[in-house]
Length: 369
Ligand code: FES
Image (cartoon, protein in one colour):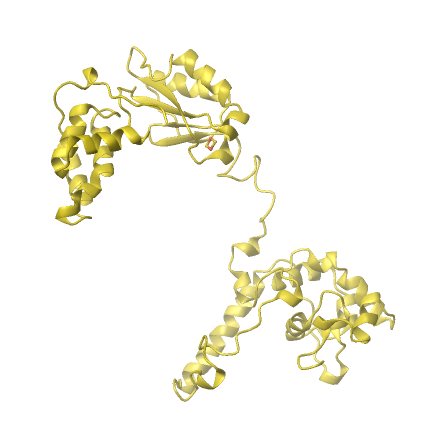
């Protein structure tokens, strides 16, 4: 780490916190016991730097040490260690330019040239005291590289042209809004998001879906058998322990049904028509590759029991079922509709043959060998 010296001459002889800073100081001191108040050294140095035009003079450090009952050398040690503390005067707008690898690869060296042209050498202050700059290490905004921090704010995705314009405006006393300087929201790709765009991710409709989304059937989480974690079932709270009045149970059940219906309405696509059948007439949907016991249960709960129903799904039906099961793209990828058509016509698929011969574990019913 480079040796950091403080500018004794520029600091003058005295420093005092601004009266409006006193409540902040009390706030930070209030966090620590009286005999541990030196723990507030970093926040107090930060407040002192704010009250001293963006840098720490030696009298400012002494004032902090006196407030905290610390030897001066201990405060100097902290101030000279952390590069967030400036030890020489800075401009009204101090530019910290990130020169670490991601920013360097994305053009930080060109931004440095702009700073040198508009401001001058590192840590030099312009004659009008408005601008100064320095190079710093990663500021944690690499996804929006290259970037600079000006006073407390980040200016990201910069080009030499945009930084030139920013410095020009600040140099003329015109404030510039911080943020991204390309068409990008936060860390999304330029031009807008390309993934995670489905409304169902954000509108709460997936709350009705049980289990973790997009897991292969065999890895899906088992429903907990008991609500009492770590206890055998027989020790789980019984209905007798917390019997609810019948009307309340009914109300809760009705509310649950309404909530599920509301959530289903939010799923994009068209819900397939349900079919009421005698259980014996149901097809073994697990003969479709991608449908295990859990998916079959969920499909049955939607009134889907026959291959012929799945064979007749429209793209809108597929979209709805994928949204309901949190399987974006999977039904199409696994060709459930094509498989169902073959099976509905009495044909077989390689997978259905393996299921029929008992070779597919995830297609066996619970309790089957
Ligand atoms: S490398 Fe520049 S912000 Fe991380």
